[in-house]
Amino acid sequence: MTSQNDIKQRIKESIENLRNRQKETLEQIFKLPVPSNVKWISIESLITALGGEIKEGTGSRVRFLLNGSIARLHRPHPNPDTDKGALVSLREWLESIGVTPWVKQQMQLMS
Image (cartoon, rainbow, N blue to C red; front, side):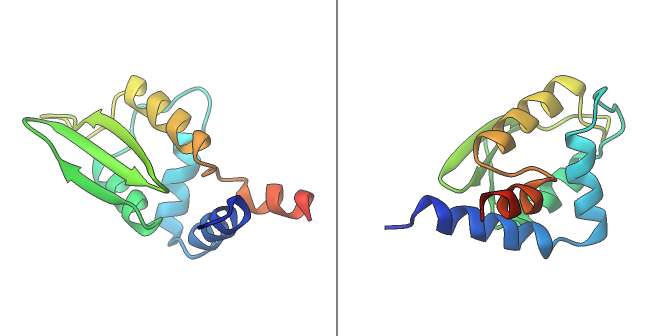
């Protein structure tokens, strides 16, 4: 069985190994006020780089699976930019599973 610390360590390592563009996307998701120019393809790249899976649903429905948790969102169309409401939902989901741009600092505080 995987412990909570193992999961947090894996998340930290995944974030450290992100490409610069993926790190920028993660930071944009947590930016306030919520930006309106985050490309959907960048979000999919981030989720995959974190070790997540992307499952296609019917129509524009998409499920992101990461760390045993599922986020259900709608892929934007025809515009490639993710709407602000979806970004807020994505941010809340990422926070709930321990993925934030500040994971490294949080882990250092815990040790």
